[in-house]
Amino acid sequence: MAKQEDQFKKVLSHAKEYGYVFQSSEIYDGLSAVYDYAQNGVELKKNIRDYWWKAMVQMHENIVGIDAAILMHPTTWKASGHVDAFNDPLIDNKDSKKRYRADVLIEDYCLKIEGKINKEVTKAAKRFGDAFNKEEFLATNGRVVGYQDKIKTILARMGKSLENEDLADVKLLIEELEIADPLTGSKNWTEVKQFNLMFGTKIGASADNSTQVYLRPETAQGIFVNFLNVQKTGRMKIPFGIAQTGKAFRNEIVARQFIFRMREFEQMEMQYFVKPGTQKLWYDQWKETRLKWHLSLGMGAENYRFHDHAKLAHYADAAADIEFNFPFGFKELEGIHSRTDFDLKAHEEHSGKKLQYFDHEENKSYTPYVVETSIGLDRMFLAVFSNSLVEEALENGTTRTVLKLPSVLAPFKAAVLPLVKKDGLPEVARKIMEDLKWDFNVFYDEKDAVGKRYRRQDAAGTPFCITVDHDTLTDNSVTIRHRDTMEQKRVAIASLKDIIKAEVAVKTWLQKMEA
Ligand SMILES: Nc1ncnc2c1ncn2[C@@H]1O[C@H](COP(=O)(O)OP(=O)(O)OP(=O)(O)O)[C@@H](O)[C@H]1O
Image 1 (tube, helix red, strand yellow):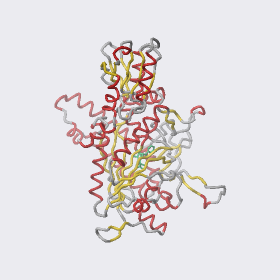
Image 2: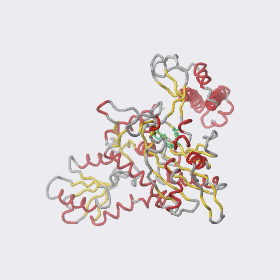
Image 3: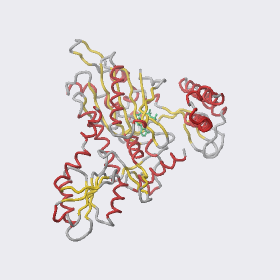
Image 4: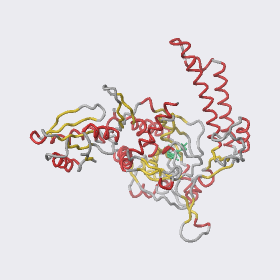
């Protein structure tokens, strides 16, 4: 755990030091759970968005994109259920005046019990050595089984109380477990109440209630309300998809873990409209396709797992998360949801407009079912960034910090470095830059010794360094150094474009999905 926390701290400071993520309005001490993407961060974020867009839209003839507005007619959110049910249970500590999510306090309590189980496992593994069988130990050791049962009972009771809106029982559970404010140890709690996560605002100059609007808490509804417009104007035939990337806003009660849980964030969503009865097939297929997309980035299959939901949202008949191994453990990165015809039907009902599809093959109209894939761009950014940041021991006893970003996502694909700032080398380096920048984002650096410049580019995540030296003036060749292997090769200037392209092109990476 300490190691994981250490890694997370490194991620935070590296993100700032190398111009990836800044706290929003930092000069005013920041705004909680709101972040700005800096000069390198904006490029990485754009490249992740493009990589998703290409895989989802460009590679599928039957998926098209839209860009709906953040502000929507307020009835949208009545129909979708967000006005009535997009709530989290909130509890305040009367002494510290700190605010918490009641369910998270209880889950954190269970995590502590899980910590005890892990300790027992480590102890037994040491004691029994090779003869240790973890599954058997978990199933038979009395103390461990007791811990597991306790977690199950607590979570089952919490789940039931939340479902039945029995918030008094959630409070009682917190009291019975003697859960204290993690910051102060106080057990002086208020009642638990529901808190709606939508940010509301008013449209126009009037303060009258009819002008109440919301900042969208998800991008999906912009797709549902445009379903028929897109289907008709694009002459789309079922099954087909509509994709969208854009900002979403949630007034999260507890915002923590950096850009993992933000109040303003970006989603990349795709709604796939299918014939009723075929949703299970498409749901399974999209689960597989989306996992392949993640794996194509080469961040280690062991770092992903599915979590199939036992308890389903009111609109879903199946749901799973793709979880990623973040520096603080496995957590949701993407959701795949079979949303039935809930949303389209709800919008039909609230708008009084038909949102049906006429199936020419079957010669009848029906409301399509929807399978959705929904991933947070910022969470994906954190997954990529934290997975890529490594400290590497070198043969000479020193270490180097490398940001081994998948090169297709790296902000800059190459840095051009004249060995010295004289003898005409900068001019040649500039010429190489001028030529490469039509195809790639290229960085120019002539300050400090070349070794130091290599380290800077390693830490910033640039896959290639191109060094111009005195020989370049006569042989038209340069040294190209690879970030990950540190291997250096002498190559002709004329071949640079092809060498870089072969490694960083979207095609090189996305084709791995087919393997
Ligand atoms: N507050 C947030 N900050 C950053 N990304 C978010 C946030 N809330 C959701 N996301 C991203 O949007 C995706 C789809 O949203 P969805 O509504 O399914 O999330 P969720 O199940 O509410 O997430 P969580 O359980 O973590 O709150 C999530 O998988 C996640 O990547």
